[in-house]
Image 1: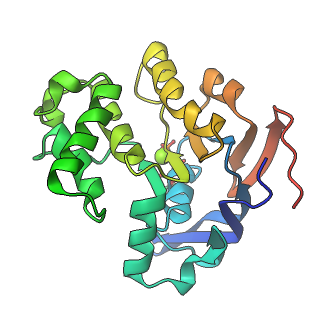
Image 2 (image 1 turned 180 degrees about the vertical axis):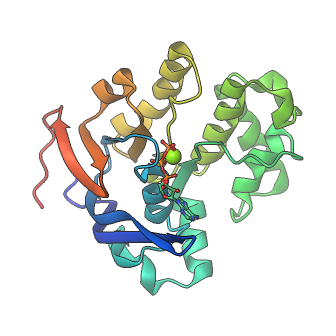
Length: 238
Ligand SMILES: Nc1ncnc2c1ncn2[C@@H]1O[C@H](COP(=O)(O)OP(=O)(O)OP(=O)(O)O)[C@@H](O)[C@H]1O
Ligand SMILES: [Mg+2]
């Protein structure tokens, strides 16, 4: 097991003000994610799972607290540096997939290669290979609306994985698909954990399969994380 976390957050807080009323969604979150582990956060609807994942991926900023990615504090990076880091090193699978609706499957994947040094042909080849791996080789030119929910999810997963990210964040990957499709998805994600190249952080309302696969399982409740279980024997020295 690696000694150094790929992501470490300390004392992260976040509030929203809605109609003059302030809601403290995240009260004090501490979390470390190590390459080679699947960490699952379980929480009821509205507890702040998506908000936490947006903050950890640098899309949203916390009210206070610190987030270090591979030792680099987010708040020392410019917007551009942060967006480059996210593009290259974080694969984010959104709860609603966030595919560009007017782009085909392959165009959605190629968009994630915008900053790479590959030629146009190489980008296309890489995107085709990834979509074939997702068993979508026949649907390269389909628009998201022409794909099933499970297929749209696989396009979102392909886009998240194309740059071989060190951190994969999957918001409710098992939420909107049947058990078998969810299993297929986990079979795609788990090799990234098992080869120790990436950490995967996934959220769930309570998918027991996903929970049973977790190396560590946390509950998010009332703005705080509690460790429900360290189900596998990984020990960290920090
Ligand atoms: N941009 C925003 N402005 C105001 N409030 C927000 C905003 N985004 C999220 N919230 C609030 O933060 C809380 C947590 O939302 P979040 O989407 O993180 O929940 P969740 O745990 O992901 O729920 P679900 O399981 O339904 O996806 C909710 O009460 C929501 O209303
Ligand atoms: Mg959510």
